Amino acid sequence: MMFGEFMFGARSRLLPPSIPFRFFGAAVLFHVAAWAALAAGGDVLPGFMGGPGFVLASLHLVTLGVLAMVGMGAAYQLLPVATKRPVRSTALCAASFWLFLPGVALFGFGIGHVVMWAMHAGATLVIAGLAIFAFLIIDNLGRVKDMPLVVGHAWLAVLSLVVLAALGLLLVVDFTAGILPDRRFVAAAHAAVAGYGFMGMLAMGFSYILVPMFALSQVPNIALGKLSIWFAGAALTIATVAAAVGSSMGVLVAVAAGMVAAGLHLRMMALIMAKRMRRELGGSFRLIRLSWILLPASLLAAVPLVLGWRVDVTAPLFGFLVVFGWLLTFLTGVLQRIMPFLASMHSAKPGIKPALVSALTAETPLKIHFWCHCTALALVVAGIVADQPLLVQGGALVGLAGAVALGAFAVALWQRLTHHLNTPNTAEIKG
Image (cartoon, rainbow, N blue to C red; front, side, top):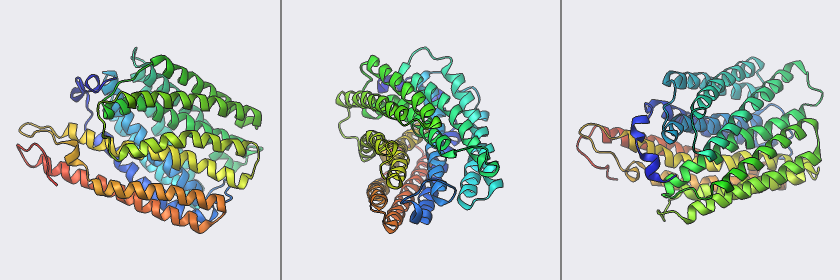
């Protein structure tokens, strides 16, 4: 998909700005909360094998509060623009947010402080919000005949969402009822389908919209992308079943299939980047490129874990690389490109020219976030491997500083957009 194809008639399918930006704003806040929770519980991350507390809270604040929140906001806005089919109901979009937001907050609080009523209430609200999201996405995709790569990944994401919601609810109930003979297997299946299924497939699918759009390129070799989808679907199916029944061999087969899917996807990204018209892509693409390295790295980290080698190290390392490494790195890179882009599209009013994306972007906070994020990843990984809790907590504090910087970028964006809208007949904002 070329940029011109994406933009043709795009303004007529824009949602009210309050819908995507409330999701993005909430994600920025939960991003801060996630690193803060990891800093508070980082002393137990080396050797962490599961269970409620601040570590598990930070994990879910990222997966639900940042990754799913950004995914929902982006899907609501980008799919109607890309598919040229409007979302069925903006009221339902808003309803999903107002269910999901308190749900994530309650669930994070409940799992962090082991408050069962908050955990159960939060999980219920989260599932309700995600159910509305799934309905709206299925409704939009059901009317799409083209865009096979985006649609294929989105369907895998929706199917994964159903499975992870069921497994997640089962795990929450098990906290109080103790119904599972060994919750580790169900937790492993839940982690696989959440990280690589729901969020992973959304990230990979939207890459076929976002990367060509921002790089001014096109998607080549659709057949290669379709093959990646088939391998990804096989890997997810095998991994979920194998993890649930505790089959190490099955999980290794899934990892192999996942590596093939990842390799094909990264080959597609390389082809898109090679054909791009825009040569300078800015700091956000440094994060996106880093995430492309961390995707196969996270899969490789699963191998020693499955083989039972130093599980006290490989288990937390694998979880951190998937969630904070690959997915969070990719989504924060996307967020700092998509927010100014959508703000620019919403900035054109009668008597007011649209603001330039560059004029809406505060570069200094983004540079701070980049270096803080990379440093945080390195320190936390080193702390896990060396069994040094202080390194983990130090890395989490650096990550927290980066999250605050990303928040400053979002605030500056809003201020610049407001200033632009209140200054008639201006082409751009200086400074």
